[in-house]
Length: 348
Ligand code: AMP
Ligand code: TRP
Image 1 (cartoon, rainbow, N blue to C red):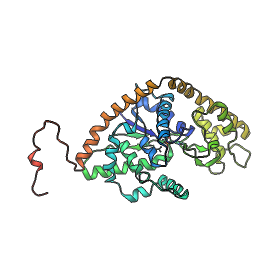
Image 2 (image 1 turned 90 degrees about the horizontal axis):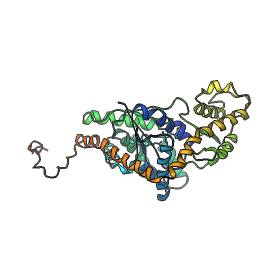
Image 3 (image 1 turned 60 degrees about the vertical axis):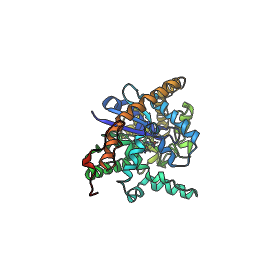
Image 4 (image 1 turned 180 degrees about the vertical axis):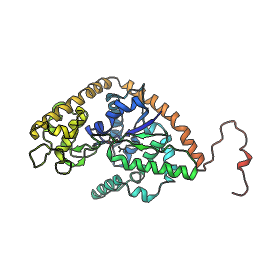
């Protein structure tokens, strides 16, 4: 059976971009068609300036929202990255296969590091090595498919490269994964700045729809979205990025097609109203289920505990195999006799 792995970082409140680009598909398709693991990748949240209490809060909230969006622990595994040591164990070994040049070429690293330096801050070493940890997340489970938004394809490419390189050097150990971006809404843009991604850790709140925004807040944000200087509703990402973004959001929420939908609306105003209502209706069931789950925190904790246990058992054999393949001496099991003499040569 195909194995699917994906993750979300607890660095901010989850957005419509996370939902349309990733989470919704995990719930609607992936968990039904594959052995699937979905991870709150909290170690990744420590790569930038962070507040420990907030990361803890956001991790719990992300887990609750994943379940609210329809992930069913009977069908898939939901867990927190730091609860499973195998991720960090494998990451180090993969650092011994990756190169520093490869890391410095990562677009997200370049962008985030530049932003941090502009602010006069320092760049954490973990921001540079983050894609290796992400590769470890993926490779530890023998993942075939990684359903992510557009912004993550370069990182998944790196995971592929590391898997191939490791297998060539040390013997076949890892499955080579591939990214599977969604057909629509692979990159939901900021409503106030359609040139940049709707990212949860960005500062410009009015352009970001959060999954837990009240319906009226959603309506206000969509109605105030920046549109383009033309008047006609046409689907043209380059010439009319603001309108194209609204059409894509509408299409993703209603199951339509952005080009066809562009013919339906005569004005920007009517497109915005339709999009606002479609987003409100899309988020309504998620918000309702989120309220129910918040009333039962013990349930969410139980899901995460069981998830971590399952994940650990799945990752362990592959990570142990990678340790052996790269030349690390296995620890003797308790009660085992002397090491096999064939391994104790004099010519090392
Ligand atoms: P992150 O927020 O970076 O932890 O991303 C979690 C998942 O959501 C990843 O698969 C991202 O590719 C996806 N994602 C995040 N923001 C967007 C966006 N604006 N449009 C589409 N997908 C997104
Ligand atoms: N880097 C991803 C993001 O920012 C999150 C992530 C970490 C991830 N590990 C992963 C996604 C493994 C898919 C698979 O969105």
